[in-house]
Length: 430
Image 1 (tube, one colour):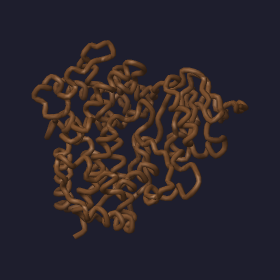
Image 2: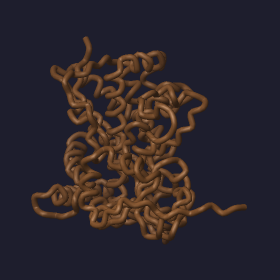
Image 3: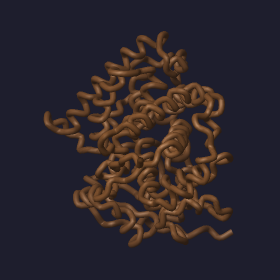
C-alpha cells in the first residue's frame, strides 16, 4: 500500500500576530478568507501565539480521533476567569474524574426533575410578554431565562439571590475573551472581582446543600482522581463553568433561532404546522421526550440549522502534545489548534450559505455538526440546552404571536456568543 504524501503546514507568515489578532476580533470572515487562500488547515500567529485553524469533516475527524495526542486549551483570560480547578482547564485523569462527577447533573432523571421549573419559567415569560406595554428585547429575556434555568435547577436559587448572581455573572462573562490585564478600570479587573463574589455565593450555597432544592445534592460524595471528595473550592469553580456553559450558549441559540423565525414568516408558518398539534405544557414525565426528533421533526431540523449557521461556540481549542497528521498535513507538537465551526459548517457542496432547515429532513443530509464541541470534551450540558430550547420554542410560539420591531440592526455580535446586536425587540400581536 502506497503511503500518503505528507505536506508542510501552510502559513499566513505572521510573526508577532498583532494585526492577525485585530482582524480575528473585527472581521467575521477572518477564518474563511484564509481558508480560501491556504486550504482547510493553516497556521498563523496571534500576539505571539502560534495557532492552527482547521475546517472540514476530515480534518476535524482526524484531530478528534487522536485523543491521546491532544489536550484542552483556552486563552489566558478564560483560564484565569475559570480558575485552575475548573474542568475546562484540567486534562487527563483530573479532567475525566471531574467530568464523571459533574455529569450526574445532566442524567435523564435529573433532566426530568428540572422540567417543571423550566416550564414555569417559560410560562412566566409568556405572561410578561403578553402584558408588556412597550417593546421587549428577546435577547435579554433569553439570557435571563437561560441563566435562571441553571441557577434554579442546579443551585436551587430564586428571587433576589438569583438576580444578584445574574448581575455579577454578566460582568464576568463579558470579559472572558478579553485582554487579561487587570488595570482597575478594565473589564478584566471588574470580571475578577465579580468572580470573587460569585465564588463566595457558591460557597454559601454549598454550605446549605442539605436544604438545597436544586441538583447539587447529586454531587454529594463526588470523588476526584485520587478518590478524595471534591473540595468546596473545586466544586465552586465547576459551578462557575457550568453556569457559563449552560447559560451563554443556550441564550445565544434561542436568540438566533427566534430571529430566524420572526424575520421569515414562511418559516414560522412551516413550524406552526407542527407545533400547533403539540400539547403544552407536557407532563414532568414526558417533558424530555415530547418534542424530540421523533415527535417534532421540523423543530429538530430548525434547531440543527440554527446551530449550523450560528453555532453558539464559533470554535473550540485543543493543544497538540505531539506531531499530528491532519488531512495529510503535518501539524507540529505544542501547537494550539482551533476548530473553526463557523467556517466548517459553510464548507462543502450545495447551498450551505442559505438558511434552510429542510435540509436536515432530507435522507442524503450528511452534515456533521458539533455545536457543543466534540470528542472527549463535548459539552456536558448538551442535553439540558436542547431540552430548554425545545420547551421554549413550543411554549412561546404555541401560545403567542410576536411581531418584530422594524429598523433594528440584525447583524450578529460574535462574542462571547452570537446574538442580534440590537437585542431583537418584539411586540405582541393583538
